[in-house]
Amino acid sequence: MGHTGMDTDVVIAGAGPTGLMLACELRLAGADVVVAERLTERSGESRAGGIHSRTLEVLDQRGIVDRFLVEGQLQPVGHFSGLYLDFDESESRHPYPLMILQSAIERLLEEWAAELGVRIRRSCEVSGLHQDETGVTVELRTGQAPATLRARYLVGCDGGRSTVRKLAGIAFPGTEPTMTALIGDVELPDLPEDYVWVRRTPGGDYSAIAFEPGWYRVITSEFDRVAGRDEPVTFEQLRESLIRVAGTDFGMRNPRWVSRFSDAARQAAHYRQGRVLLAGDAAHIHFPAGGQGLNMGVQDAVNLGWKLASVVRGQAPESLLDTYHAERHPVGERVLHNTRAQSALVRPGPQTDALRDVFSSLMVFDDVNQYLRHMLTALDIRYPIDGDHPLVGRRVPDADLDASDGVTRVHELLHSARPVLLDLTGSADVAAAAKGWSDRVDLVEARSEDGHWPVPALGDIAAPAALLIRPDGHVAWAATAEAVDTTALEAALATWFGPALRG
Image 1: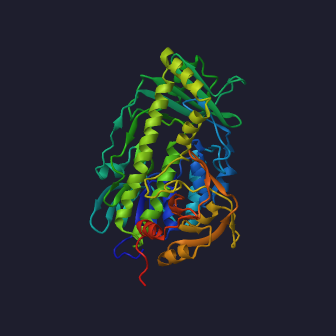
Image 2: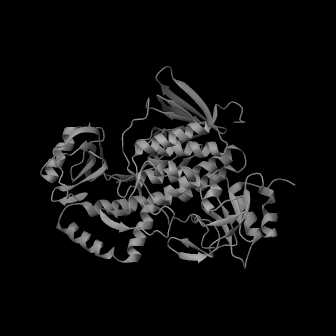
């Protein structure tokens, strides 16, 4: 840890997908971390049901994507508010959504966290915090006596009702719910064999998705029926709701899990308040249309992890943490915006039916389909990073490479979660400029096997001469063969990875 009086570098509240991914990112970067989780064990509840392209790429960047692929099922189509989207195989090595339940995602991430030495303290809930100039004192409610942990930083990954967010006094503005949706994993013995996964009715809509033989994920949505936040959820409520919207319960029985959600949409006004940060549902909640929530949380974690570790280890100034809010808050805003639109598109009634017909007719055009596909998959995100090259700020394409150490593609370079300066021309100027950061940036010389790289929203672009890749896979600097600006390279290295080594 290297900080006198500290129990750990970072305390993370919450061992869901966001908290676990962040813990793994911090450990890969050499930071010590403790995860405080209020539950005594993993709940096993299925919850979210899929991983999109960009998150699959992130897992691939860390060398663990195969663990998830073997337990899920690739789905060649997606949807925007129940209207089908086509996917383009040329845009990613992982173009299709992976159907996999959140319970499996959490188990796989927890196994990886254990391999990396992450400490998870269960039956342990954050109940108070006090931050000062050097750290945060985190008060914990445990199954035994209350305890405290002293850390450099605290990150709330503790869900939409985040205790950490409330204790830090961070506002959570947004829009109130206009509907109630019930969700459950059940058996449906009387469901017709020709059933299509979603049906709209005058009373609302319902869907049934088979995750494994014999049981289904059932969701009902009823507008203008808003349940209280603390109202209990029962299997009988789900049955009665399905009867109201479908006219039958299809013999529903043997519930494994029942829950409720709405179209409330809120976002933290600030993702950072001093030494307290927020990620995942603690930072944003929304209608779960298009399966974006879990994915956005994991991507929050990957954006934050390397930055927080760099600051904790004294390699970069604390101001680097401000880029987390600057980059991820607009992403959250966009997701809240598109999920509000999707909520409006599922409201029953002849006006919405007409709107869906028009919207569906537009989606046959490639440009419209592409725009919505990129919105849901996050493949088109471009962070506000200085630079003229079209790759700057975007996620790096997983191009094929020919490198002396046997590396065959770009994402393999990111397995250790370190920054990479990829030199595709063998430029002595690039190598010389990177010397001052040799302790924290990997210089890799390779050749691109393809003269053009596919970039979503841009098409194919000429392969760069060199590029600086952040640990999260986004490009911080890039150059063409005609113009390798080493002054700009050194500025980017200093901005993202701290000052150069002396001497």
